[in-house]
Every structure is written in C-alpha cells, then in structure tokens.
Length: 427
Image 1 (spheres, rainbow, N blue to C red):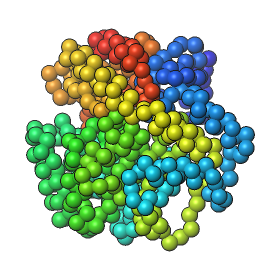
Image 2: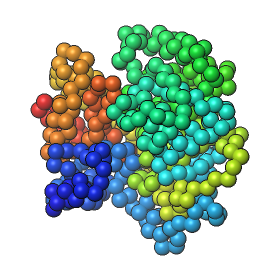
Image 3: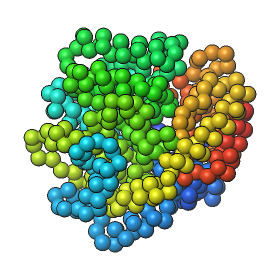
C-alpha cells in the first residue's frame, strides 16, 4: 500500500518535494509522543512534524477545542470580527514582552517572515536586509532571497538586497577559534564594517537557534551586542522564532531572551508549535511598526477560527503544565546522555542545543568534513529501532535534529537515547 502511494506521489507531486527514508513512511495517527505508520509500526516521535507538534499528538484539550469550534464555524476571514483570533492575539501579546504589541496571524512561518520583511522595508523605506549565514526563513520568493543556506535557496533572484553577517554558527567559520567574548567582538566588528559599505538597511533578521541549519547558535549575548549597533542607526531587529518560540529551548520562553540585554526585538515571527500541527503563524510588532502600511490588507486564512481555537487551547495547556520547565529538565538530561554516547562514536563532531532542540553533527572521523552518508545511515537505523528524528545542516555539515514534543517524559527520553545510541554505533 505504501509503495503504491509512493508511486502516486511521484506521479503528481514535484520532484523537489523531499521525502525521508529509502522506503518512505506514511504516518496514519499519533498519540502523546508516539505515531503509527500504515503497516501498524509504532514510533517514538523525536521530530514532531518538523517541530510543529509541540505539546503532544492528539492532545485532548486541542482536539476538543478544534471539534467544538468546527461545529460552530470554521472560517469567515479577517473581514469580520473573530473572537478566537482576538483572544489568542491578547495572549500572544501578553507573553511577547514587546510593548504596545500588535499581532497579525498568518498560515505559516514563511508567510510570517514575508510579512515581517514587508513591515520592515516599508517602515524603514529600504529594501536592504541583513541576514545570518547558514540561516533559513521559508520557501516564498522573498524569504528564499534572505536564506543563507544554499541547500534551501533555489534562486538568487530577489526583491531584496541581502547582506550576510557572521555569527550564527559558533564552531565553524573564521572566528570559531576565538573564545565567546572575542567571538562576539569579532562579529560586531564585522557588522560595523559591513554597515560602512552599504546603504542603510531595513532590518537584521536572525533565528536565535538556526533550525534547518542544524540547530546552531552563537554565544548568548551576540544579538544583544548587534542590537546596540543597529539601534544607533535605527535598523530593526527581527527575531525569527518559528522554531525556537514557546519554551522549546527550556531556558527561555523566546529564543531571543538569551540575547535580551537591550530589550525585546522590534518584530518577532512565530509559527509551527503554537498550532500543535494546525496551520498557524504570525507576527508580533510594536504598534508603530505594525501600523505603518498605508494600503488595505487582509488575510483570507490567517486567523481562521478553528486554527485560533487550537492555538489558544495549546498555549493554555503549555503554560498551565510548565512545558518550558519540562523542556529544560528533560532536555538537559537528554543532551548529557547523548554527549556521553557521542564521546564513544568517532563520527560525532558535536552534540549541541538547549532544551528539547538538540543537534548531533556528524563528520568523517578525524576531520571536520561532512558525513551525509553517516547521517542517512543513522536516520534509517533509528527508524528501524522505532524512533523518528530529523536531518539538517548547511555549508557542508551533516546534522541529526532531535526535537520531540515538549511533554516528553524522562522514560521516553531514555528510550529514545538508547535507540539513538544503537543507531550511532551502527555507522
């Protein structure tokens, strides 16, 4: 049945639509931190639909909210007052830490970043954007144009002039040999030099932890140091929290808070986990920035009632059950367990991350060269052992991505780590 579906998939869908595994997997249902495939095999899910299933599969509070809302009305567009949208916007503004916040809902992180770029370029009257090397911000024309990861950038054409800054990857690049303080100083000096050679940019967009790039991050405080330079020149800071938001990093509710010395970003984008699998994204910005557009705009599907009901129930559950704290506790244990394993596997270059956002970078033993074949082997072996994980990386890196639902238990973390250990030792 799955092979037949694979054939039909290849006949009608684009060749560039990526699928995991040599024998692609059809997931039919899930519960908690587990999913099942069409053959009835059960898997511990350590990737959560690319970090979208943030709390749990089939979370009763969310499924009930969706069912009840669908029984009333599913959709009406933003042309009409929408109580679930207003209620979720109030909660998001409250937890955003942005003063006088306004919230605009979209259907995805790509669309959220698109909107943030529109707001920044209009507000600053500039089409120049600063972005980080190794970054990923979506698959639309404008977001591809600012993505600093060749594997996810199919064209160099763009409506924006994009300039790339150092600092998103701590352990590679020309500053990798420096200690954290000198690393930050070197990146700030690079930023200042770059600004001396270009027209005033609209904004810097940055993921606090680079997702598709392999869960890489700079030392804490880098973006705070950048912010001081940007603020002096009126340049906006956009934090792309599509993967890092809502407590996934454990230590902070938002990834930017590791760099929050100078206060919150001017614009925050979010998506993925807030809907727990429903199609929800959005932008948070100060009112003066959000309200800078001088033409009408709506969203046909952004903020639709059924997805807002899901987001509100999901956020309420996350806050009431302290899933950020759980990500910190269980994630910290999982990272240490994986580092102990990695010390005995020559192919593992680094285990990094925070909370339940963990990257395992693989390299050919004794070198810094990427080992994509090893990553593929581990992915397949983990599946055979009953565990689903992700892949990523950029600039010749091979990274396994581990990002389970934030309700992961200690027992499940131990089970997943044991499967990963066997998979890593199989290289």
